[in-house]
Picture 1 (spheres, helix red, strand yellow):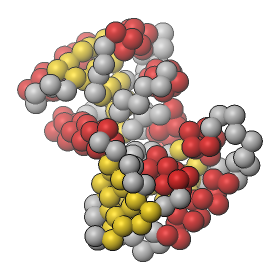
Picture 2 (picture 1 turned 60 degrees about the vertical axis):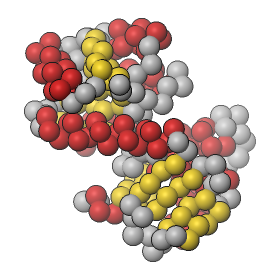
Picture 3 (picture 1 turned 180 degrees about the vertical axis):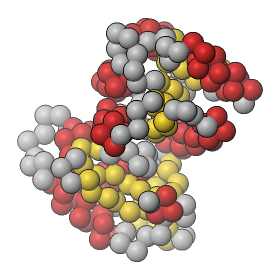
Length: 227
């Protein structure tokens, strides 16, 4: 049974999320703040984290950053009363995978939870599917319409990283640290060069595109979801 951690200081809302997710067959763990969440994650593995932002002691942004710093790649869904673009951006840059604004549509939450868990499973299987495009980590190939292309390692890992979290923005530094290594002396602008090559390779792809957020970073966006 898939296990979900809910981090929410509003007891009534926590109980509501818990009841809904239990009815949908998930195993639940519930804590009221970020520090308690980190303590639980030291003892237990969870498949998904759902967290509020405004909490006493350690807020949701701080929690997510600590989780990522600890090397935990568990999907994170933020649920918060904040709906400004800057808040959404901070959520994604801190390492979250999806974002919902209160009041939450519970049916939509269940759908988003399911989508995040399916994507995490595909990543564990070393495979990502975006519509008719499939990325295979073991062979470093991208298949579209039955035709496979083997990419250079850095290009593939860059695309795979972004495609693993569609809609999430990655800064140039995050990409450099993860793909080239923290101690790399490579010029950070090499990321821009690799992004350009990927865009050229997949210019006509119907399933995704690479979007630039000027002054922030890059993200992969599913074409059917682009606003």
